[in-house]
Image (cartoon, rainbow, N blue to C red; front, side, top):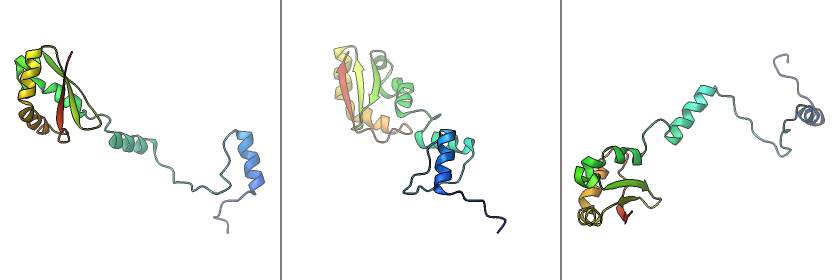
Length: 128
């Protein structure tokens, strides 16, 4: 069978691996996956981790004046989305914080209309 590649013994493969300073194949047997083009690998990682697309936080920050109004936006900013789906907002003025608190249901609805932000459940307002 001339099409079949030559197989070395386990000892020979281990010796070659140690000389090349690469790990030898696991004695329990590992499955080798077919090679993929580097571009294909990078594209799949970009898609998986959302690289190159704006994050929900970025989308909210860009539209913050539309969401809370220009007056409130000048005294507040969206900081981050925590693991519970809460948008953390810092307000630099107590009156603005109170205004955002009173209108939080409407603000959350406006945020949910922003593409990629449908998972926001509540606002966490802090003064600072």
